[in-house]
Amino acid sequence: MVIPFDSDFAQLQPELAAEMLSFNAAVLGKDVPEGENLSEINSTLLEDVDESHPQVDVRQELVGYDYDGAFPLLIRYLTPKGLRGFVLAALMGAVISSLASMLNAASTIFTMDIYREWFNKKAAQSALVWVGRCCVPIGVIIGCLIAPVLANPRFKGAFAFIQEFQGFVSPGVLTIFLFGLFVKRTPRCCGVLGLVLSPIIYGILFFGWGDMAFLNRMAITVGAIAAILLLVTLINPMRERIVLPEQTKIELNWSKGSVYFGVFVILLTVVLYIIFW
Image (cartoon, rainbow, N blue to C red):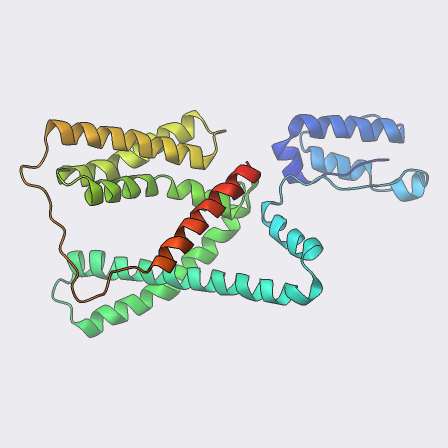
């Protein structure tokens, strides 16, 4: 048996690729060719294996990564045929809605926070709408240009890259939100401080401990920012407590059923974590 492998596998696992190359050469009774591109050398070695060595089987191919293939495999082998269409329809709906919300948010941020504030402060509403509409196709084009780059195995797939990138911003936003909501004497400077500390702390963890899971890095970042903001609040608290405005136009009372169902969802989530830990 000989085993081919692709260039991604050779790039991610060079030692294993060299070992597999030596193994294939030994099976075929040939010397290991010299060179740096192990995948091309192995492919050349196995070119005529079916004709020259009919007793040797090419069993499988080792790929360096296929992070985006897990979910399709689950649908293919675990989902009944009658339900595959519903699963794919739900998946496409989720992808399209997420894409639409991201494009809408990006165009709104550029239009209201950049264009109106820095380029045209007296822009009419029609002009703002036109700028926002132009931002959507530009965002799509930028996304199409970035997507092929994420196919590089060093990014570990698009999902992993997105989660890693969000780790530079989201921990600070979450901590600021929690402090603003529950700590009434938090000084206003903590908002800027949290946003500045988030990429710094997460960046140190990212470049210093790259093998750590991104969720653990985010948790450590949130804890570190919370500790710093708490220290700043204790040293320089606001003189008066922040009083949030009361909403009187919308009914905010909850029913007993919603409380019971919420507790049930929380308990079910805890059980799932315990089972699949």
